[in-house]
Length: 191
Image 1: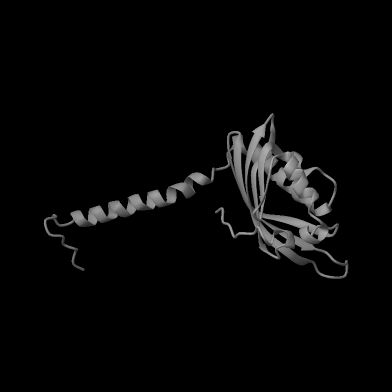
Image 2: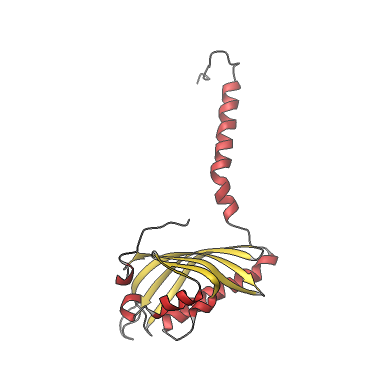
């Protein structure tokens, strides 16, 4: 194979310039992805466990239809965006939860929310989470479970007085969109 010759350039210089340019482009294009996910260390392991516990309790409370005040998991000035329907602040978030009926939210005593593939990155008193959620309905003890919906979430959290809270939370449905979000839904990607 003959090397590429560029008029006025010494042989081999073009190859070195091309390789250097490719390496620089690779670093520029991958830098945000590398910087996004933090490696779990001994210092961040407890925080990561606490965040995962918060997420699991959140979905257990949603699944049970219990009267837990889910807005208490948010900061006072939090932004909660479910399929484009936005609530700002705890009071508005509590109102949003209160306005979701069983038909629209697929809530019931036999619905279980599963949280999968969480990517939790902790950086001091802030953190981000990306995960997949799935709603599984158990209609009858003699029937197999049925997946009723699935989607993704992205959250930004802050730690205050030793406890983690949602600062910004984005929930996006990928299937079986409840009617309440039909008009506000827009496909989104956070990863």
